Length: 426
Image (tube, rainbow, N blue to C red):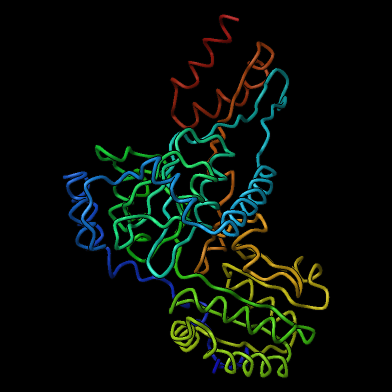
């Protein structure tokens, strides 16, 4: 049963903190893994793969023949689903491409911004409890649209020493250049520092477990990363018009991700809160992943009962959920007051699963409150935006009373002199 809590009846700090990953607990272990890969390269990768994945591999790279054969192992329905999802994801992410621009900021001073893609990117695709071909699409397609020259995917091998057919087909459809059977912190280390088999990248994206998250944080600076990501989560913001059955199944759907997945309903309606709770409890045993759902809801399943929509929005913005579903009488009006969320789903007919798989929006999103400062993965995640400045003689004159006094005030006299020389020689 989900706990129903009055909004102002107690301190909700622990609920807001939820299942934030305690990366500190694994940092020593992860650092030792990274050091092993830095020092011993492919040899370390083979040893660590055998140790953690119980698979002995001689070659990590997935061959073209394996990728081509993957299509024969899949039902046409799955292949068509992957292709349609890829089409929608591509359409959405093409709209995110920014444009280059220039403007005259002062007389004779032209300033602007150009767009360049990151050259090499690593996409981490988790394994563990399930295979995630959808994550291949969500990471590879935006990178390809951005113009990344080399897109490298790493994913843990299965017990048979192979990668699932759906992941391989999705990687091919999305446009990945290389796929390697390496998982965990060791994959992140290989992407960050390079080995004989896996060449170094400039940015690593994609979700993962606590070891992957810790590894990404440790290699940040050597490479860029997307953002810290923990267990998947949902917050549903509803008034008395919310559909209790839809809400209950949205909660069940999110809870089946992980035993640490937070699921929260914030509502002004006690009747809705109780109805949702009853439907959740009536259906848990019918779910295939019922044990995971039970554990998640026992630890992080909460219903917050508020006195007003203002209170509901206050909690929602403070919580900053990865996924936010808005089921109110006027969801568009409610949306105007939302400040913090990874991805937002408006109205009764917009489940998170639509965004997870095929509506086009990205499902690689910030969790554990990080939506207060991060956005989800996008085409722009793979772009750099260098600025460009061009001065004419008129521009030198326009800026001389700005540059020279400020440079000298800061004690950087050579800066002032480099500007003066151009004034003297114009």
